Structures are given as C-alpha cells and as structure tokens.
Length: 331
Image (tube, rainbow, N blue to C red; front, top):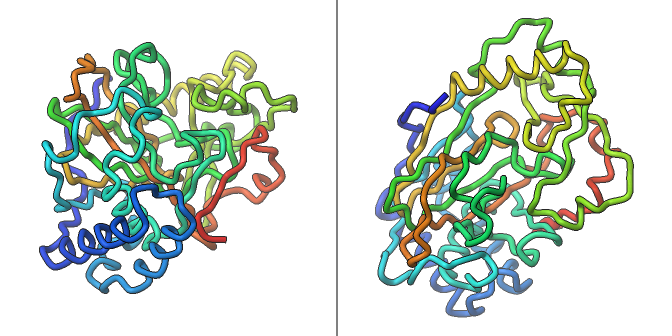
C-alpha cells in the first residue's frame, strides 16, 4: 500500500530562535573546527544547549500526539553553500559541519545524543545519502527499493528513543514514510501474541560486525504495553518470521497491514528536522532513482536517548546487543 501524503505536526521556529541556534552552531564550529566527534566540541554543545532560550526548549518538548512525530521547521539551508551531495557517508567527511552541530544542539536539548562504535566511524551525526552499489539494500544508502518500515536499530536494547532527520537537500521531494502503533487497530488476541518474546530481531546490513556475532539471538516482543500506551519494536526485514508459529505469523502480518494502512508520507523540505519517537513510530522511505550527480537527497541523522524514559520491557537490559557498543555523548 502506498502511503498517503499527509501533513506532519509542525513546530515552526521563529526568527529569534533560528538566529540563536545558527549563531551558536557557527560559533562552536569556528572555535573547535568541523569535526563533531571531538570531546571538547561535545562539551561546548552541552554547555550551549543548557543555556538555550525557553522558546527553543518548548519546541524541543517531547512528542505529544499519537502521530508520534513532528517537524521542526525554519532552519536555513543554502543549496549552493552546502556543496554537492556526497556519494557515500564515508566520503562526506565533515560536509555540512554547522548542520551537524545544529542537530547536536537540538538533540542535547531533547536528551543525550547517541552514536555507535560500529557505524559511520562512531559519529553522532550520520550522513544519509544514496550510494552506488547499495541501491537495493535495506539501509539508508539504498534508493531503488522501498526501505521497509522499521524501528531504528531495532536489534539493540540501547537503541534511540528519538530519531532526528535533518533535511539538507530533497529536490525530488522523496518521502519518508511513518506509521504509529497508536493509530493501528488490532484484536486483543493479536496484541497478546505479539507481546510474547517469540522471535529475535537480527542486526541490519549497516552492522557487519554484529552480523558475525557468536551468540544466541534473544527473542523479543514486537508490541509492549507501557504505562503511557502501546510501543513497538519492529523490523520485518531482519526478523526470521519463518521460525514463528502460523498463529504468530498471522498476527504479525495483520500488524504489518495495519501499519501500512495508517502510514503517511512526509516529504521534508531543506531546513526541516523530522523528529520521530522510535518507540511509537516505524519509518521508511519510498523508492527513487538516484542520479549520483551531486543533487540527490541528503539527510543528516541523529539519535537520542532520553534519560529516565520507561517505555520498554525491563528484560531488554539482559540482551547482549550482538556485541555492538552504544556510545552516549554525555555519561
């Protein structure tokens, strides 16, 4: 089912907030250089984020609708100034460094930025661009296939609570898809089946080392009823459904159908920052034809942990995470 274009809840940044954020990011880059992984830079980001105005903090408040997402709008992007879209994250280097720091400031206002030792060289801000040779993978580097709706880093207990996608370039208005568990309609019997830890979620293709991990994959629930409502942990492309009972497969299929039914397509504009609650919403991307000419879609991605948040089963703490180390910017 093709997701219907739909307006996402928008939080518009006013000119004063935009000026405050951009001035702060430019000052930090000017002082510490363009690498957003330096400990000194991260310390300054934390200090600066703590002093952001109440207006910005209000716009960075938690997701507060069943949509499970919102768009921060208004940050400036100069299409000529940012340069051509990189051909891969590995060649992007520190392109768009001011935007890396902007995302880190916003992420720090919302929680604790998260990186992975085994992904994109441990960077806290990832470049998401189509890459030659990866067109048909189920990763952010693909283009020619539907990126299946999924929970970000669903295989890992230390995954983000919030996912941020900052749009640098999107000339073709390629849509991000999103579907909230709070919008689906499932029978109690299906919810009961899917709340049982029946199947593992395996590491995706972005984590080559994790795929070679020598350990028993932990079985995890797909849906969990938290104190605030249902949450989910979902990645069908990396879930061995053939190992499930027919009843479980059928319930999982009905969940997939419901997520498809309520799915919406969000076409980000340059300067938009899409914030997704990773416990409520699965996200993906529609297929497109990459040109590799410097004008393709280019997003910046940041992941955020929210200290003290209680939206997941306690049993997740015992999972091995396939040996992958989640790194939080601030201990």
